[in-house]
Length: 278
Ligand code: SF4
Image (cartoon, rainbow, N blue to C red; front, side, top):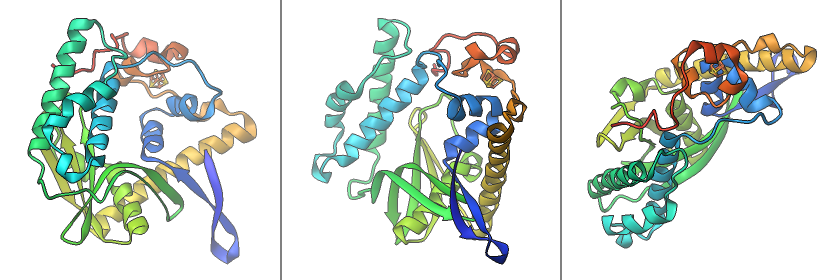
């Protein structure tokens, strides 16, 4: 856990700001033991690559490179070369599966870029944002930040197998923290957050209010406080019980299940391509 001496608290006593990313908070909320093995333990051997993660990374990389092209060069004709450059097959089963998903990714990307507004240039692509807020420093890399009508819009690409709903955008802690940090770093208003789901071609968005952003910040501060207390207990007293296992179906695709008897008991082994959509 990364803590920095920060703001002055009551009576001038410095309080610690807990530096967190949405990924850290999500990992803690999903399973404290997994959090410990991901961020605090000496490198423990992880499972091999997951095909769905590889596919997601490829699509993100292609879109980043696409938006880094000069606007006049941005067309779907660029996609085959970009896809060839960024393609990886880690975690996939066989050549037939690889070819099928490569073609599928091409189709998603083609549909996506063909429905983009040709005049729209993102303000930032894969932009790192970081800002102190309350008791935390929230930071992370935003897939894309657009500017529309003088306001910032946080865009996150999704490639999972399930279509998304407006509630996914509204309840996303990551998107809310990115919106708050983008406001601070880019000094413009930011209320709107969007998830762009490439497999379904459906974008969902939510316009936050100051109150709804405050609620998400409260949630982030609560999670950060919990994981900081557990980290202190571990570092001060070697208390590994501060990171209990939280089992469920997700244990099937946990990178650390080889080191977790409870997780192996709770959910079956699955193939590395099990989370690819059909
Ligand atoms: S296998 Fe399950 S319980 Fe074990 S660390 Fe992973 S997510 Fe947590």
